[in-house]
Image (spheres, rainbow, N blue to C red):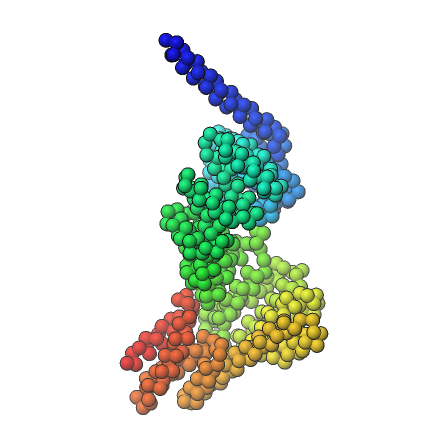
Length: 564
C-alpha cells in the first residue's frame, strides 16, 4: 500500500511540474505578445481589420499596417518587426512572395522574426513559389481566429525558446551562437533540431566546413532530416567533394522531389564538374515544379545561353523579366541578355521568325530605357545592342543612328566604368564592322598605358571579330552568286566562309546545304562533297534541340545519310 502512495505522489509531482511548466510557457507567450511589434500587409480593408482585431485580442499593442507590397517594404526598411502577417495577393505591384523575397535579400527580417503568409490561392505554382523563401508558416483562406493563433503561437514559442541563440546569430556573433546551441543540445530532453540547424548555419558563416560536415553527419545518424542532408551536400560542395555532393542531392531529389533547393545545388555542382548540359536539364526540372523562382529562371537562362540553347535561354530570360519587374532582382542585364538570345533569329531573310524577333528586340530595348531612364550606363548598353540588332537586320541607317546615340553616352561615363564596359563595347563594334573605331579606342588605351592587359584582350576580340566578319561577308557574297545560278563559284565562297575559325551556325548551314545540293547531282563527284558535308555537320552537332535552326540541321543530316 505504501508503495502505491509513493508512486501516486511521485506521479502527482511530475504532473504538477509539467503543468507549471506549461503555465509558465503560456505566461511568457502572453507577455511576449504585449511587447512585439506587428506588421499587417493586406490590401482588403475587411481582412485588414479582422487581422488587427485578432492581434488586439492577443494583447498586441504595437500594430502597423500596409496596403501594398511597396508600402510594406518601406515599413520593413525603417523599423524592426517581430511578426509579419502578409497576404499573398496584394493587387497591383509587389505580391506577398516578392515582399518576403526582398525582405530576405535586404536583410530587413531578423532570424528571430515570424513571417506568416496568408492566401486564398492554392495553385502549385503559387504555393511552391511562396515556400521557396521559407515563411515561418502558411495559412490558407478562409481561416478562423484559432487557425491563425495556433500557427502564430507555435512559431512565436519556437522563437522564444531559441531567442538567445537567434539574438547572437542576428548580431553575427556566430561563435557565441554555437556555444549557446551546444548548451541547448546537451541539456534538452528531446532532440533540439533547431539548435542543430542554427549551429550548422553558424559553421557555414564561419566557413568551418569540416566541422559542418561532422555536424550534419551526426544529425543524419540521429534522424534523416532533409535540411541536414542539404547541409551535408552543401558542405561537400565547399570542400570540393563534388561527386559525393552530387550523389546526396540526386538521392534527395528521388526521395523528396518537391524540395527544389536540391535541384539548385545539384545544378551548381554539375557546372563545377563541367557538365553544363546536365545542369541545364536539372534546372529545367526544378522550374517545372516551381516556376516563380526568379533567381532560378535567371540561372537557367545563363546556363542555357552558355550551352547555345537559345530558345530555352530566351524563354527563361523573358520569364525572369516578368517575375523580377516588381522585385529586388529587377535589373537591366535580363533585358539585354534576352535581346541577345533573339539575335540568332534575326537576319536579312524577312521570314516571320526573323521579323517577330526583330520587333520583339526593339520593344524590349525601348522598355529597358523607359524603366532605367536615368541610368546612363544602361542606356549606352541598350543603344549599342540596338545598333547590332539593326545591323543584323540589314538596316544600316538605323544602326548608325543608334550607334551615334550610344557613343555620345559612352563619352559621359567615368573612365573606370568605360574600362568595365570596354569588352562589350569592342565586341559589338566588331560585329557591326566598325574595326577602325575599335582600333582607335585600343590605341588610346595603349597610349595612356594604364590598362595594358585590357588592351591586349580587346585586340584579341578585334581579331576574332574580323575573322567572323570576313566569314559573314564571304557567306553573303556566296548567297548572291547562288541566287544568280553560279553554284560552283558560290560553293567556293561558302567553303571559304565555313573554314574560318569561329564561323557561325548560319554560315555552316549554308555551306552544308550547297555541298549536299552538289553531292546530289549525278554529273559531279559525290565523295568530295560528302566529306566536306561530314566536317560541317560534325561542327553543327552543338546546335541545341530547341534552336530554331535545328530542324534545318536534321533535314540536311537526313539528306546527307541518303547519299549512300
